[in-house]
Length: 263
Image (cartoon, rainbow, N blue to C red; front, side, top):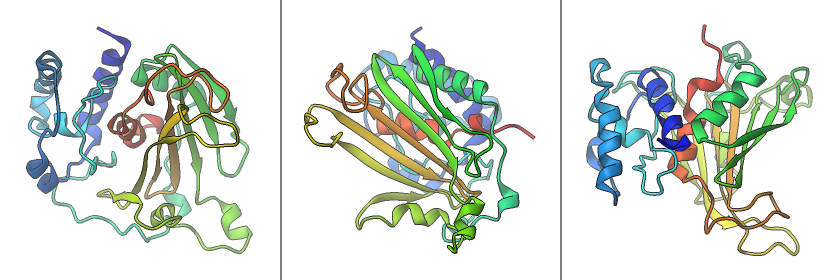
């Protein structure tokens, strides 16, 4: 079993308690792609083991297999709040009160989880500032030789109000440009996707590619995941034809509740 497969087993275990599906979309969407019968059989076996908790029939569609370029994707991946199907979506324009903020796991536990779920050979802590008002954490993971960036911060921190601004709602993350790929999750969180594009910057080759997503949670956290096809953001070597994580894999990372301390 590869490191990617080991990581997804843990992600599936957690997802059984965390994900609340959009039933209409899941039923109509189904499994959109897949080329390997062997890989599908492995996914099916994993999902079957979760039947006792009632997730058979939708979990394989919601949670992708990390490391599989043909993983099933459903853009309405749920948010980890444990809401049941049919619950009315919360308002993404509602600014989250500060007292609703979920506490994070320790920095070391977050790094370990990132390594387990991505199958990374290494995870580097770039920035962890527990004293900052936005509680920022930034990690670089090495996945199949390329860089994956994982960044989390409190976007609704007191600095916003102190500077004279209004508390930000999750929908704010989708405001920068028209026609963005943005999805409202069942709890009112917003998920912004940006598919493969050149890394950008003066003198940077178009073979340097990245894809990214941003999750603004309903309680005020912002999670950014960026996958690249290079060993570093701009100056690294190209080691893959495209970014090493699919969008579905990045979504699964972002919506997992593994980053938050359990009550």
